[in-house]
Length: 223
Image (cartoon, rainbow, N blue to C red; front, side, top):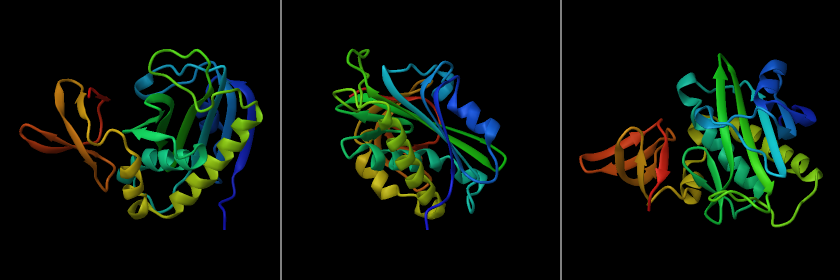
């Protein structure tokens, strides 16, 4: 049986994350908007709106998930995003969605107590994007697309959460992760080759001194 949730649909808002946090109750909640004036990305970056964009945030209290396991929900949300957006979408660990080598979206996870708010921002159409940035669609899909895609994402995400942290989808994620097999660098001065994503959702990197697992830090591909 599908998990029931409330839906709040807005044309524009400061931040779907903040709205989801403010309105969160015991039942899951999905907040969707076409524009954000104060949207934020990972590491506090400001999120820029494409001409046709989708910003969605799900507030949920995951049953059966311990605090140490919640970071995996970013990867679970990425899997749900690919299911909603299409198999042409891949992952750059840990929070980016890419298509044809360009970033089209990102995920943001914020937790407080038993409440988790997961945000998904997607460029649906951007005819003249900045370098390295792309969009899901070649032509404007219209305003209804954000509702269809965000509800599809939310429903798949909530379903995956019910599977629990032990069945979060590691193998599925690994197959679609474009960071694996790449030489990477991370702050402040780390370097190595990404070789896997482990069961905890950490990026396994082979360095000159051996394999390590990254659970935080900014990672970018260099080759």
